[in-house]
Image 1 (cartoon, helix red, strand yellow):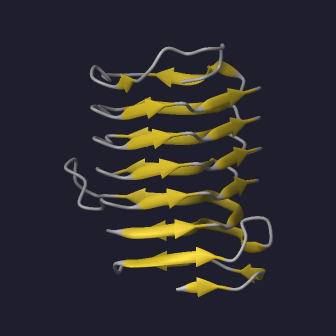
Image 2 (spheres, rainbow, N blue to C red):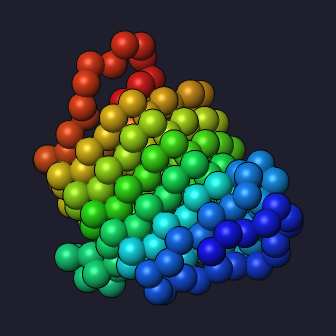
Length: 178
């Protein structure tokens, strides 16, 4: 589904296999107006070229089981900003998060909790409390070429409670690149 440039208020809950493509990430805006979740993804959903802002969570993939029944989603080339808890929250498996600009979220940029086999590549994570946060048994995730700039903790990467098998691919050429 192609979405024309414009300002769209409210939240979006997508639970069908679909691709949502904004005309331009700077001018196709989903404003949650303080909603709990601005964009909720189910399984095999792709969201590309949007600004997603002003919710408690910008984009959330929330599986109720440890195995992650919500999987196969793609979050690509979005600008996710101004959310209370964070930009992207993943509790699921086999999701891809690439080429996003994630900035000025109060708590975290990308947060994985009990999330496995996810791929995060080439995201720019700026001015959040935590840049990329992995916790609660998040294993076998791949992080490559993500730039952390001016996040408060650990150059934006915070590993907590049980993460034993996550892959940081490549050798960082500069501090803050994971």
